[in-house]
Length: 317
Image (tube, rainbow, N blue to C red):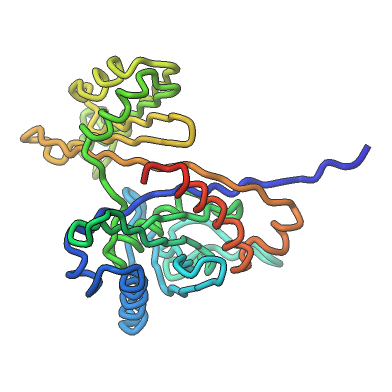
């Protein structure tokens, strides 16, 4: 019996950016060429400024820094833009690297990667040039050598702070209209979370020494084959007592809908609600490809091309 070839999955979530209603203001034109030039220009501005983009990780000391971006073009598809992003973590208080000896991390140390990849693909829709809509498809290359959460965090900052083309937040009524047509949702996940800062749970005999503290609270529910009417009730109901954030994830085949309701002003009970849709695509590679090709530019293009074509022919972008 032949040995079974070991394989790995590469997850490729596909997002869309916000639609540009006045493309002339952004691109200087309305063609795909202008949209590609816009990306090149923004990256050139970032590179010439020589000021890395630094951002904090929520409630963590660790900082993440985007230090460099390389643009790759390929004959497989002249419109596709593959970005290679260098990013590292710093401000590290704990951890170590061990080779021949154990080296503790210091705040100034940098732990990073030069191989974070994302593909941008310009989209222009419409039959009347005066009413064209313009946006980009975003294909994130979540290879098995990295944390998917960390890659996506870096790519979101790249899109928001360097390219100024954030992933689209969809209006909740639009998503609910789409889900009502499906009627029964195969899977719903609800996560409730909160952070409280107080000293109420500190014994009275220790309060004079108390400096600070926080209480983390989380709850997770999972449902199967739930009618959309019931899901709407859960989404629209007030956040439960003591929970500041409610995240709903609805999974329908390869589509994933994320609806978040978060308190932004506790005193006035003011909430922010966002909705997002992503297509969760994937491709498979062999162990040999993992060892030899995982970060090869032509290989990445060859793996992302069929996913892009599949999305364009079947997606409702």
